[in-house]
Length: 287
Image 1 (tube, one colour):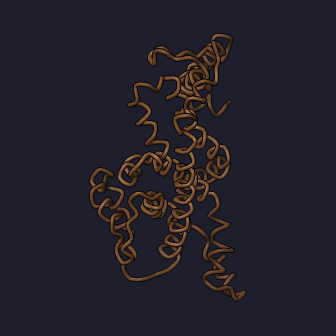
Image 2: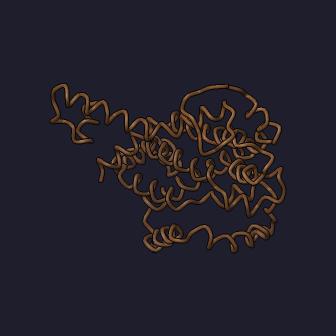
Image 3: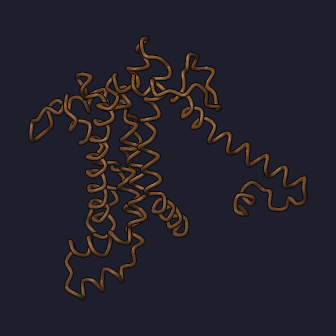
C-alpha cells in the first residue's frame, strides 16, 4: 500500500481528509481497471438486449448465453485456438532460446547483422506481410507443402518472433561467464551447458516470454483469416468476428464468447505471474 501511495504522490497526505482522498482515488483506480471486466462478467450471465447499457449489478442471471454459444460451435473454436497457441508457443520458445544462445554466448562473423535483420522484422506491420505470407504458406519452400487450410499453417509462422529472440538474447548475455567456464571444467559440452546452466538461470525471462507469446498468438486475427478455409478451422478470435456479423446471435451470446476468449489469458498470467514479475525486476536491475 505504501508503494501505491508513493506512485500516486500521496505519501505526504495525512489526516482524515487525506485518508478520504486516498480511498476515493483507490476506488477510482479499481473502477477504471476492473469495471469493464466486471461488466463483461455480469453481462455474460445476464440477458443483454442493448450493448450500450451494460450493468455492473447482476440481475436475471442465466446460462442461456453460454448454451447458445456452445450450440454455435464456440467450444470447437476454443479447441482450435488452444491447439494453435500450444503448438505455436512451444515452437516459439524453442526457436527463441536456441537462437538467443547462439547470438549471446557464441562469437561468429556477422552477429550484429543477424541481430539487425531480426530487429528489422518488427518494423513491418502484419498487413504488409499478409500477401507474401499467404503465398509462402500455399507452397512452403524446399518441402513444397501447402499449409493453407490447416492448423499447422497458423502455428509455423509464429514460431520465430523477433521480440522473443531479442529478449532472450539480452537476458542470456547477462548470465555470468564463470558459470559456463565452471561447467566446461567439469567436462560439460555446449548442449549440457545450455540445458543445465543457461536455461535454469533464464527462467524469469521464460515466464515473460510465455505471457507475451501466449497473448500474441492468442490474439492473432490476420493469420487465421489467411489460413482458414472453412468454419471448422476458425480460431476463437476469428469466430468472434463471425458471431458479431450474425444478426441472429444476440449480444449476450457474443459477450459470453468474449468471456471464454478472455479466460485463458487470465489463467496463463496467474500461473506465470511470479516468473513474469521476476523477469521484469531482473531487467530493471540490469538496466
